[in-house]
Length: 74
Image (cartoon, rainbow, N blue to C red):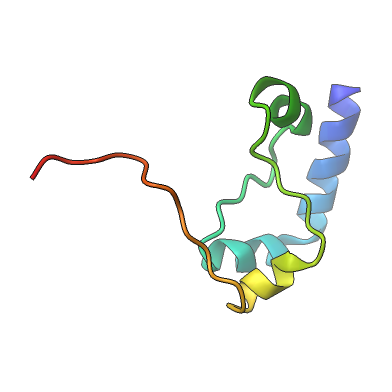
């Protein structure tokens, strides 16, 4: 099941490279060839199902922010 899911998702990603390129240019962290089962069952998240917002993100109509990942001593 895992291999079938990965093959399907990877073929979809290969078929729409510009969609992922546009999201990356907008600052969206993209994992084109990830493993959905890994995201769901091991990481308990970290996946994104597009319901129409990807185009708005790519067009700059929706801005992105990231949480603080580390603090540096000054």
